[in-house]
Length: 298
Image 1 (cartoon, rainbow, N blue to C red):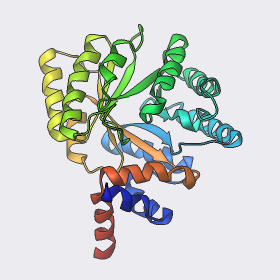
Image 2 (image 1 turned 135 degrees about the vertical axis):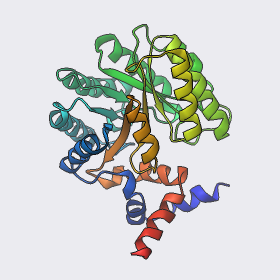
Image 3 (image 1 turned 45 degrees about the vertical axis):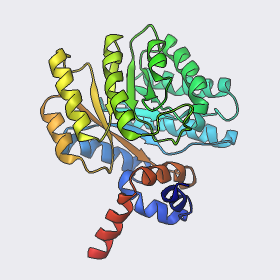
């Protein structure tokens, strides 16, 4: 039994919101855009804007989410350092794959007008096939759309090989979803080793790897490999999460001339943010201790 995860699952929502606050820009689009601008101005960081939410079931809520994404596009359309991430279960996947595709297409098409890149997030393994089918349809039509693949899944090497004939941006990460042993690796060192392997495979096939990890030895291994291979700047980037303390490493990456992008979420409806925040706390339970320590030391 995973006692750590059980404890976090039982946390009341207000407490989760409090201790997970470092991971979230705020509770409005205006605050989100201000954070994106600050990260660029002060640190040279790029951002991917994410509206927190998943497992949305009501059509009215899905349509409200689409409307928010259209507002996000208008808000960041003059900011080349901003991209947008979205989840299929926010946009109708729980009703049908066709409905989700129609909603994602609306967002991707609106973003394409302004040259804004859209990343289709990957959720747990039960959605992988449908998410990849939707992505491939979108990639057939648009150049401003990329995908996420998770190194923990056994299927990922084959998914990379079958991704798309047209090169695309691919966020490669170990993944945050707990997956059963029959479909996924269970040990973090194995997941990290595969992530490194898949960076090379993505490059071999002409894709643009978005290397998403906070593991400093893995980041340095990737940097050394990319330099040795002679991969030019602008053919890859690194990505991390807002709130994870890696400031020195992020500044070093920026100083080397590489794109360093933070995943910067915000919430307009906290009920849809709680699942994400609990997964973040489960992945990094010390975050709760950091927040409480800082609170009581004031």
